[in-house]
Amino acid sequence: MYALTAKAMRYMDEYTIGKGIPSAVLMENAAGGLVSEIISRFPDKDTEVLIVVGHGNNGADGLCVARWLIQLGYVVNVYFVGDRGKVSQAFTDQLRILTSMSKSFRMYGLGSRDDLKILQQRYDVIVDGIFGIGLNRRFGANFAKFIEYLNTKSGFKIAIDIPSGLNGTTGGIMDAVFKADLTVTFGNYKTGMFFGEGRVVSGEVKLIDIGIIKSGYSTIDDKLFICDKKFLDDTRHLALVPREERSHKGTFGSVGIVVGPNAMMGASMLAAKAAYRCGCGLVKIFCPNKYVGYFNVAIPEAVVVPYKNDDITGAMTEFASSVDVVLVGPGLKEDSTGRILVKQLLAMEIKLVIDAGALNIIARNLKPFRKRRASCVITPHVGEMAKLCDEDIKVVDKNKVGFIKKFSQHYNVSMVVKSDVSLISLLNGNDQRLFLNTLGNSGLATAGSGDVLAGTITSLIAQGNSLNNSLIYGVMIHGNAADKLDTGEDARRKMMASDIVDSLF
Ligand SMILES: NC(=O)C1=CN([C@@H]2O[C@H](COP(=O)(O)OP(=O)(O)OC[C@H]3O[C@@H](n4cnc5c(N)ncnc54)[C@H](O)[C@@H]3O)[C@@H](O)[C@H]2O)[C@@H](O)CC1
Ligand SMILES: Nc1ncnc2c1ncn2[C@@H]1O[C@H](COP(=O)(O)OP(=O)(O)O)[C@@H](O)[C@H]1O
Ligand SMILES: [K+]
Image (cartoon, rainbow, N blue to C red; front, side, top):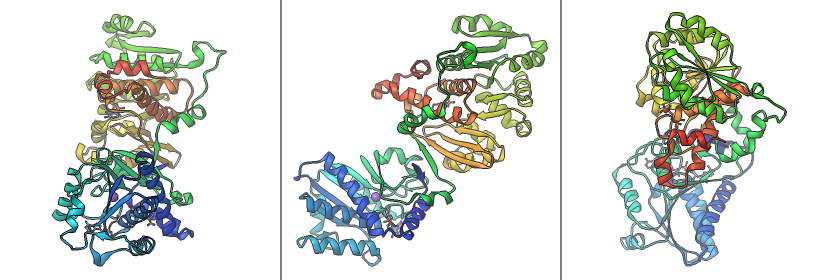
C-alpha cells in the first residue's frame, strides 16, 4: 500500500478507467466505503448529516454518498459551494441519479438566502466534499471563510478523500483547511496527509480499496510504500533471520561502537543497550582510556576496549576488524580525532552504520564518503540531512522525498531521514525503493531516541540481516517500541530513550 502524490493518484485513476473500469464504478466503491464508516459510527437512522459539495468529482463523491444515505433512511442535507458553470460530468451524472431516485431531494446553496438556515442547523455529521486531489491553486477568501465556518460547527467531521484545502502532495494549506476527525481516502494514501499540516488536519485516516488496478504502479517513481504495524507484523518473520535455539553468543554477531575522545557518552551507552536488547551476542565499545570505568558501570554486559591518543588509527583498525559491524556517530564531537576516526572507518572494508556527529563530519567533506570502501547505511535527521545536502533545513523539510531520493542515488547509500514520519530509501543495484514509516509517536521526540535507533539497526546487521532489511525493520521496530508504550498523551509525555530501549521486542 502506497502514499502517492495527487498527480500520481490522478494517473492511477485514469489508468484504471483506461483498463475498462468506469469512473462511476470507482465512485460507487468510494461512496460505499465512506457510507460503511458512517453506519458503523452512527447506526441510528435519525443521525442528521450535512454534505457540502464542490463542483468537481470530490463533490460528485459527496452526491453519491448522499444517495446511499438517503436510501438507508438517514436525514441528509446537501449544500453546494462550487461554481455552477464548471460542474464536472460525474457531478452532473450523480445529481441526475440522485434526483431521479429521490423525488423530494433538493440541493441547497444555489442562491436562495433561505438556504443559509439549512447550513446553520445543527448536524451530527458534516461531510466535506468541496475539494479533493483536484485542488491546484489557492481558492481565496470566500472559500476560506466558508471552510472556517464549517470548522466552527459542532458535529463529527468527515473529509472525502482529503480535507478540502490540504495540498494532497505537500501537506501545505491553501488559504484554509477543513479540520477532519476522520478522512476516508480512496485507492491510496496521499503524501500530503503525512507532511506539513497533513497529519493534524486529516484526523483518523481510513483507506478504502476502490478497485484501482495495481499494474499501473510500476511506472510511478515517487510512490512511498507505507510501513505500518500490519506490514511489520506480516513480514518481520520473513525479513529477519530467525533466532536459533542451538546457539551461543557468537551465533548472534558482534557490534562495535566507536566513541570519540570528547564524546557525549550517554549516546553510545543508549546505543549499546539497544543493540543488546535487539539480540546481538556481543557489544564492544572502543573508547578513550579515561571513559573505561563509566562504561563498565553503565553497561556491564559490554566489552570495553580502551585506546590512548597516541595510536588511535592502529588500535581502531584492529578493533573494527574484530566485530561484525561498526556504529559511529552517536555522541561523536566534530573535532580532529573525530574526523580521523570517521575517515579511517570509511576507508575500511567493513559494515558501518553512520549517525549523528559522524554525519556532520562527513557533510564538511563528502569526498571520502563518496569513495568509501565501507558498505554502510546512514541515519540523518532532517537537520543532519540539510547539512549533508548543503541546503537550508526548511527547504529540505519541505521536499524530503526529493532530497532523500537524490542523495541516496548519488552516494549509492541506503538511508533513513528521521522525523515524525521518517522516509527510507533502499537501494538494490540500480533499483531504488522509497518507504514512509508511520510507526512511532511523539514520545520519541526526546533526546537519545535516535541513538536507540542506531543501536537497533546495528544489532540487526550484526545478526546477519542485510543492511537494507536492518535499516527498514530497525526503523519500524523502534517506532513500534514507542507505540507499545503509548497508552495516552501522558505516556507519550513521560517517555524517555531508556524506556524505548526496554520496550524493544
Ligand atoms: N477520477 C475518478 O474516477 C475518481 C475520482 N474521485 C474523486 O475525485 C476527486 C478529484 O476530483 P476532481 O479532479 O474533479 O477535482 P476536485 O473535486 O478535487 O476539485 C474540484 C474542482 O475545483 C477546481 N479547482 C481546483 N482548485 C480550485 C481553486 N483554488 N478554486 C476553485 N476551484 C478550484 C478543479 O478544477 C476541480 O474541477 C478525488 O479527490 C476523489 O474524491 C473518486 O471518486 C475516485 C474516482
Ligand atoms: N513526533 C515524532 N513522532 C514519531 N517519531 C518521532 C517523533 N519525533 C522524533 N521521532 C523519532 O525519534 C528519533 C529521533 O532521532 P534523533 O533526532 O536523532 O534524536 P537524538 O539525536 O536525540 O537521539 C527518530 O527515529 C525520529 O524518527
Ligand atoms: K474533501
